[in-house]
Length: 158
Image (cartoon, rainbow, N blue to C red; front, top):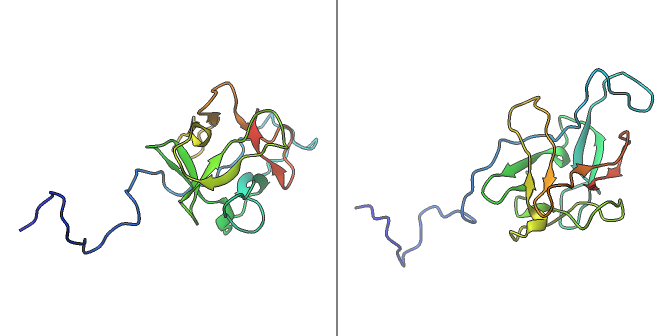
């Protein structure tokens, strides 16, 4: 017989940690419109957020680079329960802000701990819908790279 009460016996197929509802895997692309002019060009270009330094690991900086369908460094999920962004390759890591208004304080990947520094608001799952990521600590700050995108620019709240 099946019981949902706690038990001292091990589960047949335990999970690594409690499950939490998350978005499908996404690439976080900078929004572009026909009136956008980046590097003095009106041609559409595709810029995405990614983990710096080859892979998504603890202390990796989040940066902007050209979008790549095959790059695992550009695949993230939004976890609704704790309002965190996590890399697909290691969901134990979360985007964490480290202060305001400075490229010297970029968003980095840190072990998820539920801190307000790891909470982000504004994500929309609808493909193609523009949105702004606002800091969970202070909603007047948005994730940005500060100007026209260029490869490997750090992302920070401003």
